[in-house]
Image (tube, rainbow, N blue to C red; front, side, top):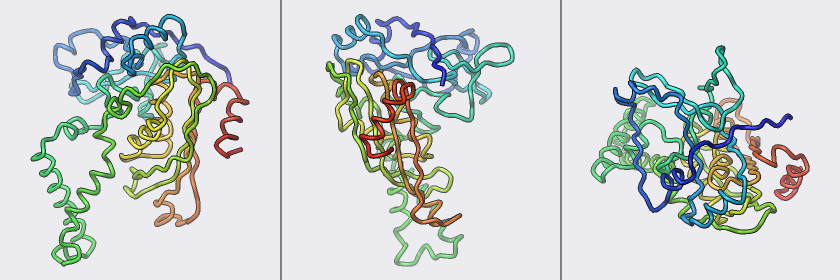
Length: 330
């Protein structure tokens, strides 16, 4: 496939390092723009969401900026933010695809969440949904109130399917389910900076690094039933490496939320790319979906395989073949 050249990052390195330093708490406003924001003609503002200083080491950042050319981000299209009327305002992202509208301006693809949002926000949250911020900042009292609201909804469900919510065996089921659901979706509360925890190191290594067969459990967002399997993550370093356990933690963070396997695979790949800016990233996931086993076509034993290849893994067939060979797939 043809290789396109993407625009270079236009933000000043010093500004990026200042914004993204782990030693500083970056405040990011999550609500829609104010009237003053809407008055400003900043829809074409270019932003950079690269995490060049996530390791907290100035020497690593300066080395990357001075002596190496980091690969362009695979992020495509535009970043979107809500306007006062609930619609989305799209402004230019430095890592753009070639998609263009009728007037020649680049447009977003609303059907693809990973093209509308960077995998890592400045404050560390990853693709937060509506309510993610409030959930993260809940007080113990607010969290308990949330559990009670979920439990009340579960009692309604139990009643509607013909059960007796006051029966001894399921008397405490609503509260148990509420707590379990918050655990199943705890990825919404996790911060990518806490997950990485400065485990990015300068290392002169340019061969593949692979962690394979990482168990993952998630919930299908269509039916809210589980799917589970394994994910294998590989990358080719470009002066920096990531602590091995962090690859598994990144996969866990994205899996512990309502998901589809295709998006989960891409989110993991894009997050590793943004953190390290390596020469390439490859992610392969195989999972069994209970929505195909317990209902619908009811086909036990079937599995779904998805992959995401970035950089050299996408460009070079031999590199892909080596990766598939090492993870036991041909």
